Image 1 (tube, rainbow, N blue to C red):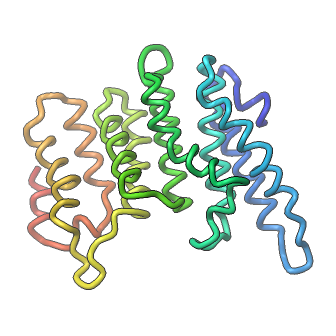
Image 2: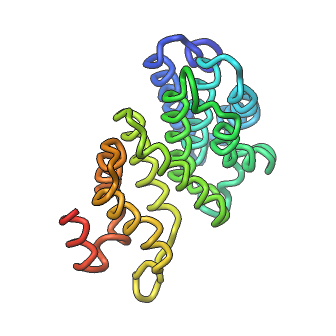
Length: 241
């Protein structure tokens, strides 16, 4: 799976292969109990598969780099199972891999791999990576969180509905895992509200680009309750746009 099928020319096979790798790792982890302390499956995924796929994420071969990004995403998510917040960094054999994985999206964008042939595939792949990073709740600085949000916003307005769908799924995971609201009042900061909800509403109401209005309308429906349900005025604004 990780050396052949993950790099197949058919995108469906690449996607299925990444999902299968995820399930195999989760299955191996779930078999562990008090009488079975064998960590070979987790160690192999962390020390062998993950570094190998990370090295292929910038490949000149479209199928290889797309499959590698999907593989990294699913392995990170699978390895995060049954880990507490304090030991999630043990997913990676070295701290450098944490930095590399969290910066993969920006690096791919910087290399202009969203452009030209296969650009849509890479956008969708990176969105899935962001979603898995978020679901795994990897440690991210505020700057990194905002950078990933910017990347998602750029894909939300993409003309392809497939890209938009992967982008809003990533948005939901990112907003649920990061960008906390005030613990006492459960009210988001005005800066966060303006950056996300108000921005999206404004685009839906005023933007002339049909892809942008469609994408951000969809995105509003994927935002968590902490940004929408804290105020009836906010809910009314969303429903009226």
